[in-house]
Amino acid sequence: MLLNKKVAVITGGAGLNGLGFSTARMMAAQGARVVILDLAGANPAAAAAQLGEGHVGLVADVTDKASCDAAAAAVLEAFGRIDILVNNAGITQPVKTLDITGADYDRILDVSLRGTLYMSQAVIPAMRAQKAGAICCVSSVSAQRGGGILGGPHYSAAKAGVLGLARAMAREFGNDGIRVNCVTPGLIATDINKGLIPDDKMKAILEGIPLNRVGVPDDVAGCLVFLASDLAKYLTGVTLDVNGGMLI
Ligand code: NAD
Image (cartoon, rainbow, N blue to C red; front, side, top):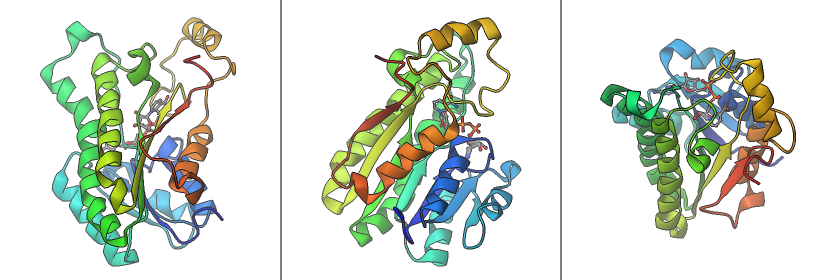
């Protein structure tokens, strides 16, 4: 198994139709002990219970540094180590540049970008002490092509920020044995976009995807498992474009 006995922490992993839970399931199937973090309303404990014995769900808000630190401390208390962090939590808002309020901007950037920083800060000391760790960050094709599907410009900015932050951390912590990589999913069918794309718009979107289909969560989860595993042991600071060819 690719992740035998590794301890994997996944933020925003409680939505059963989401990328995070799909990743949790695939990592558990590869032998990892999985910790799902999410907001209380998303019920991370119930999601973790679906993975079977030995997995844990904890309430954590990635926009709150104390909450991230407490979650990391609880994982270390329970498992004694943290091998993998998947910075997956994110929210979007379909809105145009001139309509973005300060509160909108803060909300969108706080979850994807501040959350990626806070959770990384929370786990890096343990990874550093172990001299090993893999951090995988979930950005978006919106960062690369300037939105165009559902996210607003602040979402593109947040996800572009994730790419920069991840590369900077990859450079800073490589010598500590910590690898930091990203995925940039294209359009993946999850609750974040459910019912939001009318049929005529979907037809146009599919014309721009060489593989001619919308992605499914497992398409992204497989890439995250790879990046977290030793198969990717000489990869850091890279971005896998999981988008069906949308950028060709
Ligand atoms: P989703 O809405 O199912 O998952 C997002 C999860 O983040 C939810 O479980 C939510 O409760 C959690 N969350 C929100 N705020 C949080 C907070 N403050 N603290 C902790 N958890 C929080 O959507 P998804 O499509 O599975 O999205 C997962 C990630 O993938 C997001 O970062 C999203 O931006 C990114 N992404 C999705 C797509 C897509 O097409 N679905 C494309 C590119 C990138």
